[in-house]
Image (cartoon, rainbow, N blue to C red; front, side, top):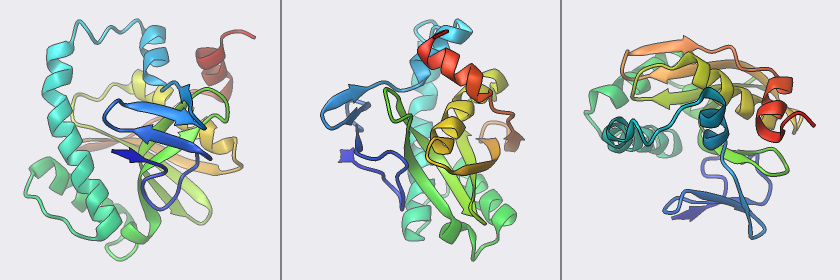
Length: 194
């Protein structure tokens, strides 16, 4: 499936995402995601943990899909305990009538140069954007600080104000606040010490 800015908004002008190939592009030019850079920085090798990634991937994709469908259509058609917990927590935090009106799912973000990614959930309120990443595996604070730091900076490049950054951890049934890495750190991660 190819999409441009799934959800109500895109913060990635001209960027498209090929879901089958998991590739981002802008006007035909291939972009990079941020995962590889973060893994290199943290000296993570997902090849060594391939079984865990594959095991979590199917469940994580389903949880993301159920939440996205609910945000986009209002229909919540699952009894999966993790997806139900995310659904109930978002309603508890933002109110049942407000959360879907405020929330966007799988929103493309872009550094206007070389990198793009999709934020799992963005909740917009009073011109402030809260960023959420859904994880079905264990909470990894350092990884998420880098990931959400990239997303935060990508939005700030477009003049948006970012409020909370958090991980919605299905594994622990917890919302973890995340202190994103600074803009300076993110620039060094993505482009080096130029």
